[in-house]
Length: 224
Length: 209
Image (cartoon, rainbow over all chains, first blue to last red; front, side, top):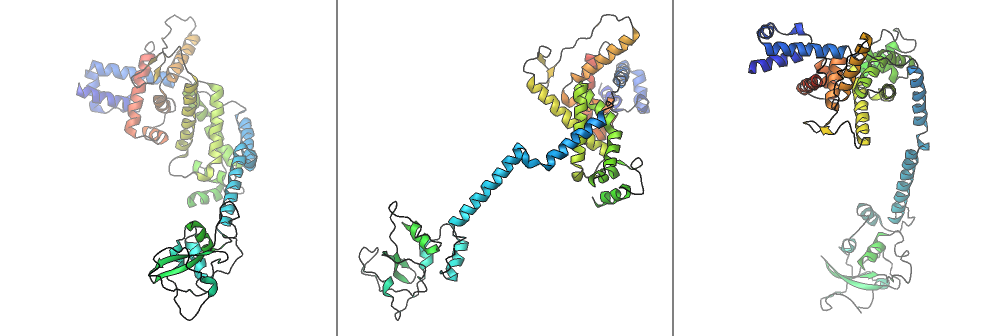
């Protein structure tokens, strides 16, 4: 029976009954089951071949041209379709978001007073620059004294006993806004030093002056 | 693709060859270059086989014509993406098959309850109960007509995966390897599906076989 199964596969896959191999045809001649299968398949193929063919209607080309012209028209004015509106709307929204994000990030700021080193750090870490990284290592000098950056030690954080008199050069802190601010004692690799920070009142006054395009000012606002 | 572009230059407007003598790949390359005559020639060559094939898949002439036209529109609009890795007829039959199968699935979704298909086969596909009419017919032409209708109904009642394979093989006369390319299946799977389809047809057409 296993042989019959293989013969039936051969019959089924043959392009024409006469294309069946000689050995298989000998088996078919002597096997009623396989012979009947061959007859059935031949009749079935004849039925399917006789089912008739339909042709395209005479106006097929004309209608096709009309549909094609419609498709071409749609393609040329895709932005007038609902999906075109959606695409345009999406692109506009993305553009607005990009502009707002760039403006918030200070990309369009005209304030160029910050030093080049600070500008580089703004580009590389635009979102969350660490306060400690901006001020350390402080340049310690004993010669230059800048009274504007020196504030009485009231309300300082850290050990008062170990606190040394640390002053920073104007270049190093040029980005800070010192008006009506206070001082925070920060511990760095070179020891503790004082960093002036502006007072920020949430709700009572605008924070925009703090954030006027300068990296250091934004860093101060996030440290509160 | 460079070869195809070169072929397009040969049959383009004012070219040395006419569209009638160009092969399918050359015509496709010309269509890509905007040659309308090349597209008309492709339509002339394939409109009848494609219409017939879709008709055997759907058993609905009006819809078959629409889908055949949709097939040519897709050929035209995607001519720039056509790659001559295999024969164009395989490519166009594949488009037509996909459209026909999508149409069959759309119809199946719409048909919530069918009184004709209360049963499902071994593979979960609905099986249409279509007993052959055993009443004698007087006129021989009517008999032939009725037989053809019975065969068409039997084909259209096959599950779609078997239907595409059997129509491509026994109605359109494609070889197994080309059917495998059209349906993106292995040749073994194609042979298996055709065998299964013939067995189902034999049951449905027992009065004629």
